[in-house]
Image (cartoon, rainbow, N blue to C red; front, top):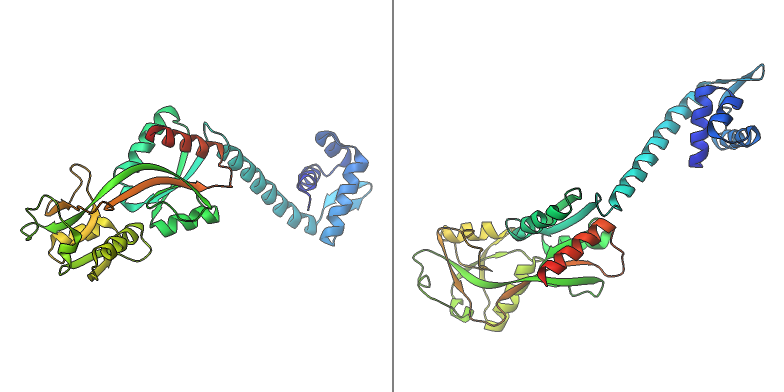
Length: 292
């Protein structure tokens, strides 16, 4: 059904007078009458009783009025939300990011951006790398801050930060006094790791392979803080990013790995061929300029 004709029907139902409704809507009476006729044919029932050249909304019309009002309101709401989303000064950025970036990088970027764009809203979600890429592909997110760089050419990417990787061990561990460490030296250690599908697990698998290690994985976690907590409790060791100052687990010792590939590239990704809404484009431009 035509949305404009639903609006016309609402006015006609409220006035029950073709002349008055046509004047209010700024359309001709014949145009309004034809629109009513089309609506009644589509509905399969008369919506008004015609009494002495007057209209009276009948039971069918009452049902139609209830739903027409609801439909018009929903469409108006959708238009308002779309307009807000497309406003670079007060739109909404749908941003998704890694759990491990939630305590430092992402909050700092948001804090800096909101100084210049205080009216832009954010719809925030966090998850594993594979989940973030799925959200981008499905259109549920505009931008993702994640690691590693997506392999598919469908994604555009800009590097924001490079983190060194290290081995987290419990205090008192035999490696705790070391300044650096080769991963090959850890072949006999029990490991705490992230589950398959996580970006850090992908990088760790590559490091284990390069070191010729078939790791003994005693637990697969969902978040890096869980890995660090289990390391601190003595359940094993873990490959994690070197923590930000004052962000590490107090009962862990973090030993940099000497392997040249022991690093994690963190960046912002988006769909290459999909234009970003203005607010999201503004945030992307800000973030990429900040990291240049």
